[in-house]
Image (cartoon, rainbow, N blue to C red; front, side, top):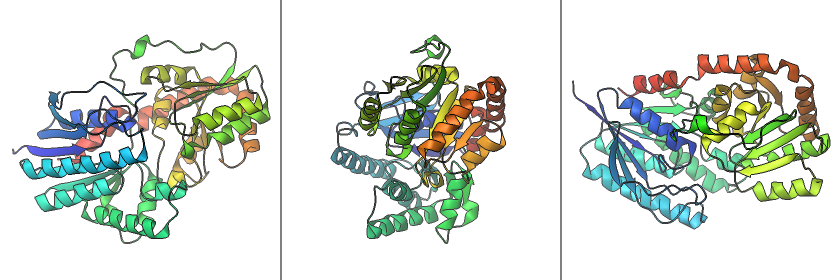
Length: 401
């Protein structure tokens, strides 16, 4: 049987800090177990200065996976100009690599660099005779439109047209939620059969130290809310802070925020304005420590700005469920995530529109904390049935053969 050559492309790869960088390592190693020759094409760690890792070998083989890391210019967090230049340079390296390499049978690319990255990869696949698989972690340009980052109708139309061409060229399009699939179908003439749903899985910890992490703040008879992740515009954490102000500076309810992002400074100023001494920011933490904090929390927040559920799925939800932690899902009720939480008794739900409603749901969760152990059992059981890592990776093995 002839070995299938597979190229997995993403702007970031382990040990860089974005979640997909680590998930791609798991996917690559799973695919390498079969009759496949797996190559990962990426870059040196360059996502954020604050979480940067040391430079890695440009060429190495780990667990039968060939890894190529190209050196770019500075960190993407330095400026938009850096990010744009690095995206262009990365795609130039990719073109040269595909042209110069023996023909790949399959090329897989996720959504970074957005729109143009998958478009270039799809063209390269078509020209070289490879199958192209488009792995949509989120859907662009709709993410930018719903997030208020893109207001030009002309630019939106152009980007949408380019992305539709990418989908037309793709052999399969993988999305991570049913809502995302519906969004792509609603665009128009897209063949529904080529869009499949393969969810993400629990974020892996390759540090080897997961069991050695200790809590940043051991619990002491307090009801703890935890947000862990990117503290950005799409998370709408300002409404959560407003809700905490409605609850007041109580000594028996606390909110921990783990992570960094563009909205963090404004949130800290709002907490100071409200004089909330029960809201604490911890900054970015190692994954193993974040999991410890999730297990200790009484309620883990999963928040999304309006309409974002249509184009993205907060994959940290799966990691939270894997820890057996109850969820407070703050987004539209019609979303598949809200339905999942409500129908399976995995925690609580509230629309992300009104801080009074959010405060009331937090207080209701506090009053019902005696049910916590039952909900934790539900979360762990639901994870084992629907999101186990080995089952998700088997879906990738079935797809690429």
